[in-house]
Length: 409
Image 1: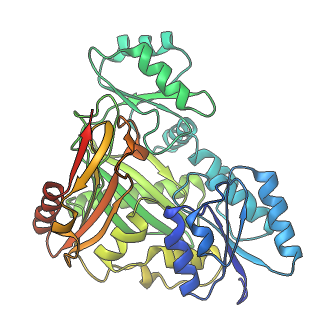
Image 2: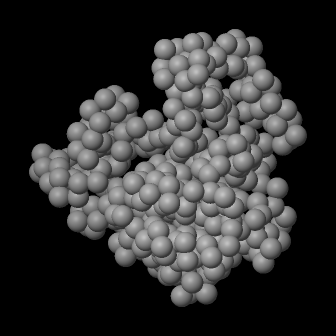
């Protein structure tokens, strides 16, 4: 167990990690954070920081050793919002700190290995296959037909993920997906119809606790095709109690198959015709408001606080993961057309509303707006709350109707 005064080492200092910095410091835990970007906003809020790439393991180990040699001690390592649990695990093991198994983290960051591993353990996943060439992809299409999903094995944020349908340009999409892969490997899988869920769980001494449930919003699937772009989520989930129980069993099976007895497991689940199946899991805290905002607003559970305590090796009462309220929360994004942004109007119509929890615009007049191809291309985000889901949906519509992006093509 860490001592008072031990630092939490946080991998990343972007906006996604600010909530973890604040949560740790509220617990009296000082934070040291690293990021390759010298202008990272988290640097101003952490107790210590360094400009180090979160993917450069030798440099991270050297920094951690220097930091501790200076008389300060690291008591835990945390990963949030960036899909590098294997680097967090390697650093934690290097420092002799609590960690998920390194092998589990390696499996969870390779979508092909992950699906092979789950299939071998009897865990339902959509049909899948590695594709090593355009010719192999064409063979898969001729054998299985459409729709299919093509994606890199090693990216997140919808980068390089394409929905393959009748009439699509297979050669162009194969080339585009391959360009996004850091390791040059792709996977193709069946597109499973049905509602999709995001879950966020903490495993404590082998028991999975899942306070985080959100229905994923793919209302723009046709608009942005062949790109698969998510538009936030809805809390609480509309799943039935039986579906939730089946998903909880599925997440527990994933944790057992990966050998994770303590740590975070974030699930992307589809409720298909044959029941729930795993699209993928991540062994780190989510970014994009789910763990930071949607879960605590909707359920009263501060999952980041509990994850930090576990990362520091401190005891946690599982009761801290039991929801204390059932409130409706929606987060959605802005998707203006590509072109030069002239103005944004209507902000004053919703700013100050007591139910508008968050409103961030990431583009400014004069910016050139990109074609929406991945989640990083979205122009902003908002979060609304309400006693019921219907009221929250009405408030989300009000925000979307009020705020207008005026764009020159």
